[in-house]
Image: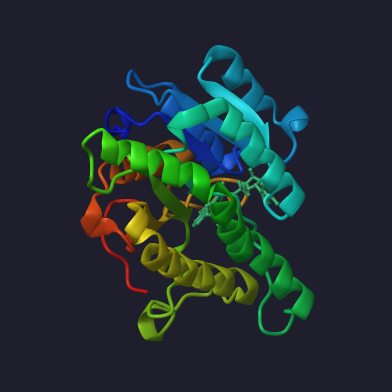
Length: 263
Ligand code: NDP
């Protein structure tokens, strides 16, 4: 399954946490398609050490590497300025909030500091990044409308939050509950899901599609070597799904296969 064709007409996509794992794979897939977005803005907190990303950018001149540490407001503001210069009056079509951390702690080892650290990166940061990029997203949404596309899509303007099944309150119960009693990670993703719904309510009038998507359990530094999916399998399906999003998906929580997940 290829997600590439559905990015036709999408001028710009920004990905956070593009140095490795799923973020890097998103950039790789977007860049290698025949209908690649005009500008792929690959952000990373440390461009100098993001070697694989640098190699990819050397091969594809539509990849622009921009520094962004999602937990630093100063870094967010600098990034918005740089991206504004890159996209100019076209604005930003698609923001993918992918950067995340997993602070592993069960009931016995959890501390207030661990909860707050995970919450900052996985919940607060996507909200602050979205707030900062709103003017550029609005710009893209209104250009899309002026060009005759009044419907919602990533080709017009969208915020995609990479969330997790582990954030589902409903699935963490009875037979479907699993061994991952990770308090900081689970709660940070549950809260991200609520941020997504709040954004969907607030940004609807601007024509900006907002949704959350679970990438599956994937073999990355975070997912570990036991995970059933490769980054290639996860991301080709995930991009196919987000490439085809419409109004009916606004405010949704989807699996990487496109199924609706329980909150
Ligand atoms: P990895 O640990 O492999 O990569 C995490 C990425 O996030 C890295 O690029 C890292 O950058 C970046 N990052 C972390 N903190 C910051 C920060 N403060 N500022 C900027 N970038 C930051 O994780 P995955 O690729 O597996 O996960 C990507 C997303 O998918 C996460 O949101 C995760 O929760 C979610 N997810 C993953 C699953 C899996 O099975 N892998 C399952 C469900 C959800 P750096 O290299 O600088 O550390």
